Image (cartoon, each protein chain N blue to C red):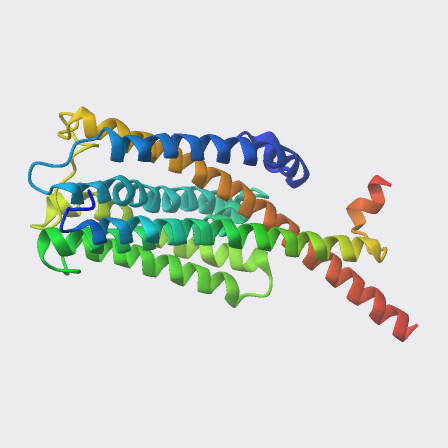
Length: 247
Length: 56
């Protein structure tokens, strides 16, 4: 995002306008995508109607890693440039990323039971995504372990960057190990192997949910900026009271 | 689709998506109202940051 929004006040003014537009656009695109997924996209010749779980499972999976990628970039901003909004961005993204990862695990399990005959299997892809979810939970816990958000931000940034090693493991797990989970069928060398009649609703939902995620991120960042202002004013009010008593 | 033997799995997956996403939106909206109310209360009591004072 443009560096001129590094100022929290300027970011708040921008977010007030952007949140409804970005969120609305995302909801419309995702709505069209879901409609197409159920009205126009065909059933799979092997999986039948169950393939429709793909239209929520795959975008959730992409967003679970995209959110973590954005958190890792924000962490670099915290540690290297001490960007004023970097740790605000990282903190705001953690619950959103955790929610999409949780959704990916749940929908994957609901897809796996009828297709694989099991809710869960400890293969590399599923396990690495579960590890991602646990990292998100750890990050959320670490944010709450510190009183001072600046100190928490630096500790979380280190943990986030260490955890980023899991992102290529998730992506390439299906190539490096023999997994029950299928290999990549959209983002792969040689182009997608999925039929266009299924691909375009999938991409439409993915783009729509990405916009929804960005709107939620901006809204959560706005909340975090307000929370820090409340904390600062609370400390000022408390110190004023203390001075009043001692004077 | 309702006659598909696995429609329950499809329905549950989308129900879970609605629950998770609406839960996220509800939490963010509630948190915003909470922080805004707390901030308005502190500002109404006359508490100001140094940077607010400098700006006048």
